[in-house]
Image (cartoon, rainbow, N blue to C red; front, side, top):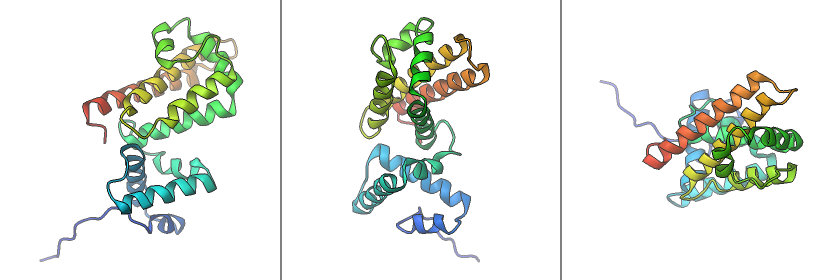
Length: 196
């Protein structure tokens, strides 16, 4: 008879294992664990230590190192939602003028989303950057669902706007609207207490 061994979650050696080319399944599990700790908060001192190391790594190497662990997560998971937030934030920081222009073009077609997104009128690049940073900085806490809804509204408006501007790319506009749908679904699951 074979001996049953209960699987364990990645622990303190997670980062060293990732650097040495860890199994993709281990990297995925680590990404889910980190995402849940960032959103739900640590449960004990070991979790708090891991969160501190993750935040230090993000400060030293950039958030992209951590976010890469979330890149293959299902959209209806905490890790998948964080990946979409990371992509949205990265794009807005790289192209704030384009984001503001597309938001302005889309808000006439999605007025309810505009109110939910919370951008002042008229939205310039700085206002759009402030919105995205405000939304993403609210990750930890009881309002994760609200933050996801706001990010979804922003992505929806920008996607609609991108489809309206002359230089717009319909395929990328559709991807933004799709991102908004995924973020909205994650918000709904979070409110129901079922977002894994």
